[in-house]
Length: 230
Length: 230
DNA sequence: GTCTATAGGCTGATAGAC
DNA sequence: GTCTATCAGCCTATAGAC
Image (cartoon, rainbow over all chains, first blue to last red; front, side, top):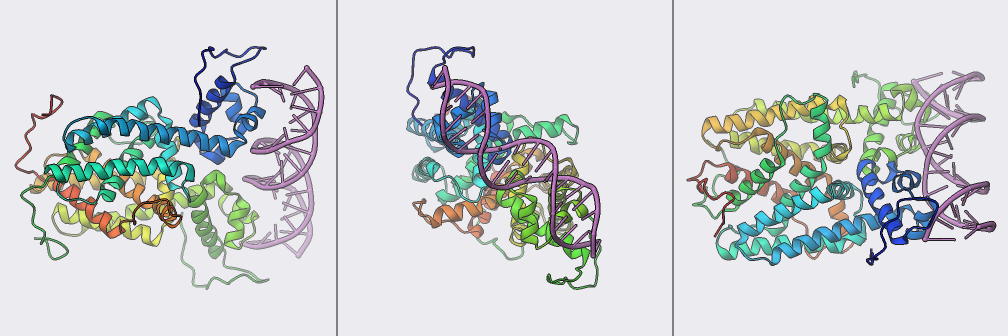
């Protein structure tokens, strides 16, 4: 979704004209929030238009319809995530450091765009992922793959299938951040018999579990598979 | 959702009467499949009735409406999952063994009720989790908590926050199984630059990562936190 | 680019016959 | 318990004025 920068300030609704790019951005922002909250089918174009303070006919005019707006929202989120992680990957440090920064980058992204993980998870459990976002997803998989290879090369990770590392890491992060709202609400309504752990603590846990779990340790020997343990 | 067992065989649609319990079960099964596939708002009561080969007015008659049917579906899934895991927990073995069996039980559940993880994830990313399922979810949290405590007591795990263990484990499993369809479709349509790992391999990876990551190792000393790494 | 008005379809629920 | 018929409401998309 190209959004060329324009100098004009977004005029805040009155009788007169408005920067068309501002309209597009307002629609994208409103759509991201609503689609994340209620899912594609749970949102009407009128809801989006209202939240964006824009006439609903403009959705068809600017994006070509509700579905196309949804795809635009998704694409912008996935593209930004892949871009951010790509930048991170380029920085120096050993695999453990890269892992740390990738996790932090994912967290930072969700801080600035909290809708993204929810949209991601919703899309991931849908019957088919939107083709438009697949290239970005594949880019992220490449990053995880190189992370795994790098770690093994550097001797800080034992050999590990990069696809499994990717599934585990991305799945855990997406689920954690995608469910943050629901967790908070469950807590607020008194359904939980304990306080919620902080995001900070969760990220540290995930990182530590991964680093320790991948360490090329003295090895808890291969033999204890399947057969009687103990 | 109580479903008292009846002896009568489910008559397969003709002019004549049908076991009312069979009707309820057909509706629950059809609803589970469709709600998982398209989400609550993506499914019409007519879709459900058609798939169940039942008149759509019976949804209101038996369940009290679309939403109530959805809740019934969720509740039955969560209850079964919690029940299964509770049984597992009671069996003997050390914490690592219990972990292994809990993971396998989750996998077995999704083999028999593949809709469950999808419904679970959809519900988890929604604004608020259905209150009716919270008790079952809390039961599962109790199981993970006792698993962590047991591991520490037995000396096979280092001290770990049970809430973090729960979030990581359950999140990873739910995401993995909930997204199986989408992954398979992405592969079939040629979007992936590699073959998919087997579920078996993923589960082994998760288990190994967890066991190694939680091991009370020689300890990669506490000090390397925050400060410059390297 | 923006807006109003409206077309045409689908939705969930229910009244009432069987 | 099951079914048909129906209603009122909401949906997306678009034609056409500005």
